[in-house]
Amino acid sequence: MIPFNRLRIVLAVSEAVPWFKTGGLADVTTALARALDKQGHDVTIILPDYAAVRGSRSSLLPEVTNTGIRFSVNMVGETVEGAVRWAKLPESRVKVLLLAQGRYFNRPQLYMEDGVGYEDNCERFCFFSRAVLEICSQMVLRPDILHCNDWQTALIPALLHSQFADRPGFENAASVMTIHNMSFQGQFWHLDMPLTSMDWQYFSMHHMEHHGDLNLLKTGIAMADQVTTVSPTYAKEICTPEGGCGLDGLLRHRRSDLTGILNGIDQTIWNPNTDRHLSAHFSAGKPQPGKSVCKEHIQQRMNLPVRSDVPLFGMVSRISDQKGFDLIVEASDRILSQDLQFVILGTGDLRYEDQLRRLAERFRSRVAVVIGFDDSLAHQIEAGSDVFLMPSRFEPCGLNQMYSQRYGTVPVVRRVGGLADSVTDTDEETLADRSATGFVFGEYCSVRLAETIERALTTFRQPAVWKQIVHAGMSSDWSWSRSAKRYVEVYHQALERRHERDKDGRQ
Ligand code: ADP
Image (cartoon, rainbow, N blue to C red):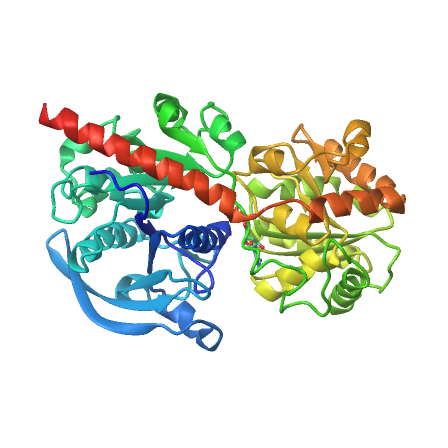
């Protein structure tokens, strides 16, 4: 039977704000859960309990309580036990179950230390994925939808398709696999296959095997009832050899089950009128003086000359090849020969971190770099900057370009993935119809980036035009409600598909 109104949705995911975050996935999980809850659905988030990470910030987080419920998973002959803790997602009815297993999850970081992934990541997340289904069964959650996110939970559709298909509580359950980034696939050597508990018959090119290895993201894409990704443009890009990271053939095969849904932003967290990290507040209707106060504050905090006339460029990002740091370094002499300031917050690839530190030493009065992860500073950079840089090589959705627009900070972006879907380039036509919200370039090349930054600088010196672009960005609608409705449509398509599969199986 296919339910039509209130769906029971389990969101299985490896990170969620406010507890654990390394990137956009954590923001998206919570915001989508809240939006689905608002639309009347019953939502449970299940995530690993990285107890040490939580412990270091516990006074700032919603309380987590022991449930007394324990579970076990047989990991290749060894019975590994875990415990269920729970919390309530603030300002919602969403339940959050945190699966605790000290050996796997009580570590300083989520996935890696010093740029190197934990050696047993396959084992950790196979355990987690299998535990999600055990918990659904043990706690009688009876999900209609298991919504899985990225490779860490991509084994779940395969388990649901096979061992759990007829288990009580899963008779009608369907799976949805969301790809947040194709470049992380959870690819491991074939001898990890037993950790998945799947039969070796699935170790084929149509399911779990990829060039001789076990590939968890491929597993999820191949076996989920529906597949989504985080923007319409990225959905097209991943079906091409350039964007598909080796899985484009499979994605083309599943094209009719693949939907691109642009992420929204959590407007309770990202709102310049209420943001608790800011020293002044502002809105589309009244951007000043709040925005200027925030600019002054960030200049002071970063030890840059406090000047209102100089354009301040900001960047908050994982420091990786994906985000265009090679272009920035290559174009830095040309960019920094201009009268501008540049504030960067990020952490990741050690090579780029070094190059950025050196830039800050060379251009002391223009460039400030903070290496690290600092949520509060991220909000302050969004609010205090005039321009936000995202020259990404690829970008599934990207959130910062939307946060920027909301905070009156004009994005300079490459026309790729979700950036193409959320920033409108400034030209005669878009200025005339008032749709211009940023500056966009196509070719991945440092000269194009420098030219586009120069275009932004020229426009910055025309206050009336700049004000119009800022206003258009600040007035855009990035709420989750529209995207959440699209997800619900996809959930229903997944349920139909599960229904059809069962019918076919019976015939
Ligand atoms: P991705 O998920 O590829 O890292 P997104 O733009 O989708 O990129 O999301 C990144 C999220 O992580 C944003 O909310 C951004 O503000 C945040 N973020 C990235 N790096 C840092 C950092 N060093 N400190 C604080 N927040 C960060």
